[in-house]
Amino acid sequence: MIRALAQIALNGLGVVLAAHLVPGIHYSGNILNLLLTGLVIGALNLLVKPLVTLLSLPIIVLTLGLFYLAINGLMLWVASALLSGLEIDGCLPAILGGLVLGLFNWLVRAFTTK
Image (cartoon, rainbow, N blue to C red; front, top):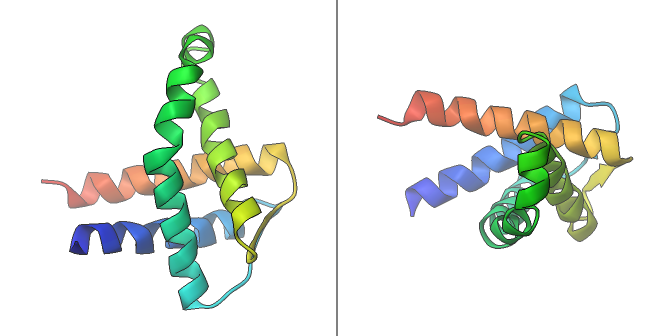
């Protein structure tokens, strides 16, 4: 339970980091909106992303894994369509934001797992 809440909060912080680093991603909202953003991204990554990844597996293999960046960007774009405080201006900012969010989550896991 605590791990899930921490992951929600870290997803929200990753979105704020992506909004600061990537031009074209805009986030506006309070702490509750940030937690809702983290929850939506976590739910998309848990429920939708595995199906999209499975369906696009041939493309992922052909591009040697680079298409996975597009899938991360797609998940971030879908989250922005569902949330009012998150806006993404196009495809490239979504892909770069997905990359930032993925790297942030990877770094957090690298320092927190035993």
